[in-house]
Length: 281
Ligand code: AMP
Image (cartoon, rainbow, N blue to C red; front, side, top):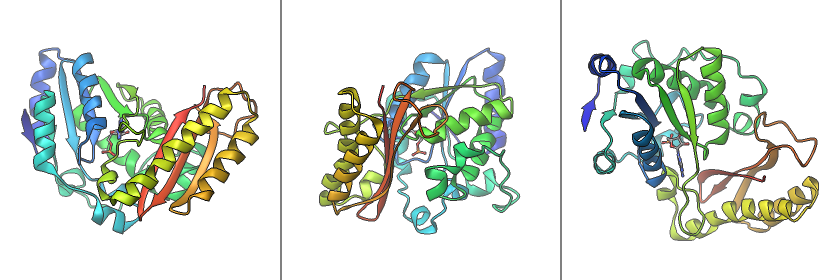
């Protein structure tokens, strides 16, 4: 696996690969890689000829400076995971390399409601920072295919909008959420959970599974919503930020139960902020 830390060297290499007409697949990450990330790498390996992974903990998308400080950094083990998976290129730039002009200018398109609701409400500025870095990384790596996880449901909808608004010549492939055997969605933040918190964190995927079950049994959306919210509130170890059933494309509150629906949840468990989601139909 080739490792690049500068934009210039990476661009030069990718230009040579493009001349060979290789289809480039790109997997942007913030490192602390787990099997969820590796599943994206594997998708990219299957569907393109050159897989580029980036590891960059983007300061502009953290609304909470403590969260940024505590974000796990495990570069050596990440490199081993990527090599084992067969990834071709790792791009691991410094903050200065990505933001030569400094961090202040946050330019990203206006995504309207899509970026204002849910995560947008609870993490002000997060999506502007995320869109800023994704656009920058896409312009550097010029991939044909971009692989992102449905785990960050709202993020992949917004990146799709970004691609449309900026007319970027790339196709987003949204990949299924990888889970631990017991159902917990894999996340870099899970390493910060104590054994007790790890058990409590299961409450999130359990709540989502309950929502799917109640919905499939024919219950009205308000009934599903109330039952799941009540169940979540019973568990005092879960600091619920939101549980919502929304239209899967617009994230608007659904008017009918036969729309394509997704249930989304965010909660604090033992001081760690976790998110998860599941389609209902
Ligand atoms: P992150 O490093 O958390 O920014 O995530 C990098 C990419 O991996 C994003 O597109 C995430 O949606 C995706 N991802 C994170 N966790 C999972 C998971 N459990 N399953 C599949 N993809 C994931």
